[in-house]
Length: 240
Ligand code: FPP
Figure 1 (spheres, helix red, strand yellow):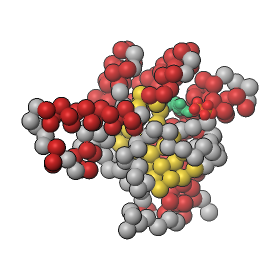
Figure 2 (cartoon, protein in one colour; figure 1 turned 90 degrees about the vertical axis):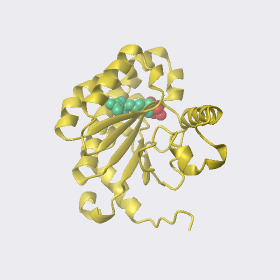
Figure 3 (cartoon, protein in one colour; figure 1 turned 120 degrees about the vertical axis):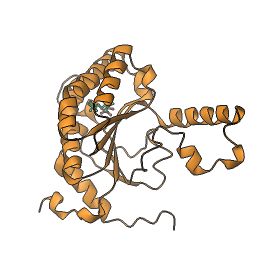
Figure 4 (cartoon, helix red, strand yellow; figure 1 turned 180 degrees about the vertical axis):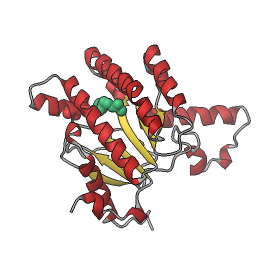
């Protein structure tokens, strides 16, 4: 039986986060340049987004470009940026048609100006959609996010807008880029590595982690539904 039919639709995760790993290895194993792996990864992004929308997942967050990725060779960074922005632009009408709201977290000010403008334009075009929230983590790292939140809290305390004694975990969460999103219920990482790699460190505190050997360019709807099925076999206790 297909995994989709095995899923209990009354107990779906609300928020699924994905570390899309293995594009480079997928390409190298086939004798291609790494960028070919990223290009093929776009198909997996499309499949995963469709799979999430089909069953009514509310939030899908994809780790598309980390702060650390800026340190890759310039040729790869440029090609990846172009691919990201071109894909986002090209897919925006389809996102609109399917009521998907595109969102972004991360230090967007580090993107090349043209890319940032194009991205902001796409975010604006989908901002009233009420279906799936497709959240792209771009120029994102959790330590960057938490550091920025700490700076903003200190500024507010200095200027009398925040009393340090009133800071609770909810207040800290309200300073993060994910301030109006629920924490992920499930994190999927492809390609066999079992690490968090500076992704959503605060938000993943009680998230179920799912690792698969499949490289990202080979990841399809059935893989996504399998991850949800496996998640539903677990007991979540939130430390209780
Ligand atoms: C990790 O593989 C993947 C990335 C750094 C980029 C992911 C980007 C895409 C799939 C492009 C399209 C995305 C969107 C949202 C339109 P890696 O290069 O680290 O692989 P490796 O670990 O095998 O080297």
